[in-house]
Length: 462
Image (tube, rainbow, N blue to C red):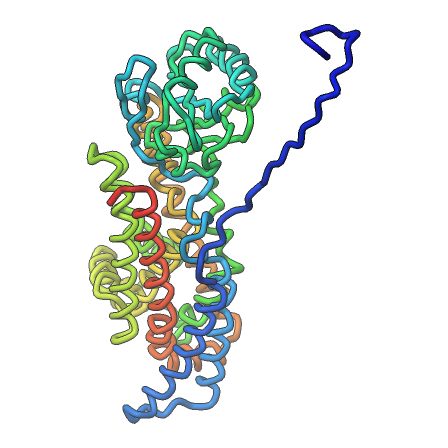
């Protein structure tokens, strides 16, 4: 039309060009390089064994080859160096400074303080999604009231304070619109700098996200679920059974044939001890991140913890490669063994409980690589939400710990199905398999440490 006259046809033509960019796949393939390091670890371990005078029987060599092959599913699950896949769906977010229309800056944690959740409408300059989001936000506030704080954030390339003013005027909403300078905040989100709706829980994790806009029912459900673990599932560790679990089967092999104890013991004590020991190993790995979530130490410390955790894993892998187990696992195993009745200690040796703890430790590390925010979000955010969330946090702490221990029990049971063959490999190859795990996982831990460092640098934490 011409000047709004529907009877006048406009003959102007234009060409609109746009580009949809894909996710950043990084600059080094995890599948390629970690497969190479796995094969090198196999060759290096065998050569080192022969050089030190340890003659490995052919069946043990075959088992080592199988162990290396079982590592590959876990290898291909790791993100490439510098890839966007490092930012998970329920990732922790950057406590960035946001600029309001009056020029005042507030951090994300300040906007979240005193509320169960922070509801964020992320918009690009000139986007009309802000109107759809505002409509759903108003309906959500009718249901949630003061439980949530609502803001809109303008982000993306070229976002300016003039965009904040114009978008704020277009919605005429009761909440403020802020500017995300240089997309510093949006870059820490799984959606990136785009139109999206984000729900942030008290632990500064993404509890819900959806591009463009989101319906009121989805928003309310996401906020209500914060005190009950958020988007996390108690079955998370069971999902590792057919990946890393297969890799750990050779470590779970029994060393000796089962014999009845000389003195009567409570029914189920053996299985219970395996669950407790395995769960303790899982909890030990996840405890630092959980503590930093509930303590007021700031988000920078939590992002730096990602690097520290991978350095810790690297240390455990190093000592496992040298002596068959990290010192932390042996110490925890001894402490747990002493806590059981004397009749049980005389019947089941300390080395067997040490192996249960070691299995739990590696299960904890594989869980950390797959879902690092399980304990911090499901337990930590529930605690910070207060009220009934504290009771739910205790419940989820026990649930996740014991579910990890139960997976260790399943590994122990399945690995014993081979009968005398299982005991033969467990007796003569148990220490060999344990050391070889350290050889295999050391490059993977180093890879993840480098990836965590790159992510921290990209987000501007350092």
